[in-house]
Every structure is written in C-alpha cells, then in structure tokens.
Length: 232
Ligand SMILES: [Zn+2]
Image 1 (cartoon, rainbow, N blue to C red):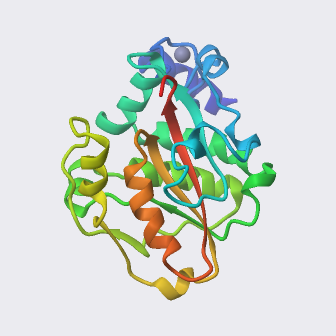
Image 2 (image 1 turned 60 degrees about the vertical axis):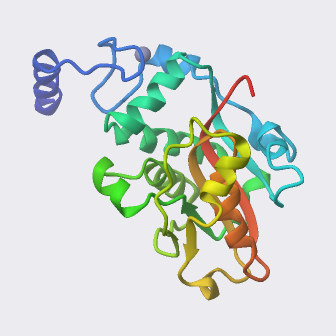
C-alpha cells in the first residue's frame, strides 16, 4: 500500500510516459501504453515456414525458421520507437519487445528445439560508443521467455563496417562478408542456433554471420528480428 502511494507520488513528480506516443497513461513498469500495445503491427511470420522474412534469403542461405516480431512503415510510429532504441539509449524497448516476442516463439512449433540464441555482435568500438547492443537486449528478452540460453562470446565482430544505408545490396554484402569470426566452432557443432538482429533490411549482416554458423558441421540456423519494413 505504502509502496503504491509512494509510486503514485513519484509518478506525479516524474510522469511516466509511453515511449511510443509520449502520453502519460501507463504504470511505471510499462514502456508502452495500452493503445500503443494494441496498435503494434505484429507479424504472424512465426506461423509460416515460408514468409516474407525467409523469402529475403531464398537461394542465398538455408534457414530452418525465421520471423520478425513487427512490421514498420518509414517515418511511422514503430520506426520512431526503433530509432529511440538504437540511437537514443532506450535499451528497455529492445528488452520489452524481446520478452513479448519470446512469449510468442516459445509456443511456436517452428521455433522448437533451439539450443542457443546468438545476437549479432557490435564491433567493440561501436559498443563502447552506444553503451549496449540493441540486438543483445532483444535476444536476452527472447532467452528469458523461451528458456533457452543466450551466448554472446562465440560469435564476434572483427571488422567495423561503415553505415550501410547508402550502399547497394551487393556493396552491403561485400561490406560485411568477412566481418564476423567464430571463436569456438566446436561448441556450435550439431546445434540449432537462433541468430538475432534488430531490424531486417537487405539481410546482408544476417547472411554473413549465418554462413559462418552453417559452415560448422551439422548446425541448423533460424533467425529472429525485432522488425522488418512493411513495404519491401
Ligand atoms: Zn502510447
């Protein structure tokens, strides 16, 4: 009771705002208001072996299952939420969306039998600048709900890749093709890995890291992202 009263006083002094719409309508432990939660454009890709996510990799790399939690539109509210996560330090957004997607994936037949969740690593210099890896906080949320271990030591980034946004698809792939290294291939042998990134665009990053994993004998590869664009 006292805690609730103190919390209410605190909420008046420091209003707790929805990270998507900015309205002060939510309890302090939430990051999105009910309205924004209701309107999140959630994909149903976890139900389909072939979907818009797996289509992106067709003929490029063998994927067992893949899905993005939400769709975003350019300049839409979901894209703004993702940019808060990536560029304004709101790691809680990644964690919360990981928890929410994890609750879905733990009951999805296509995502059963995963041994390890591995987030796409940032180069150490970028990690230092940003303070956290947005793919890792999302992966941690997935790991908690799916009751599957996360590993952040085996896959490392050895090359800092310049920003991808102005490059063609081919340039992007060449840019990241040799950016990753696997430190302990034996630990991955025979395992089913869920490779996790923040946003799916061309897929060049996931493809490059995924190829390293599939080069290890008897591995299986699945993928999960927070979001992919609605119009591509
Ligand atoms: Zn809201």
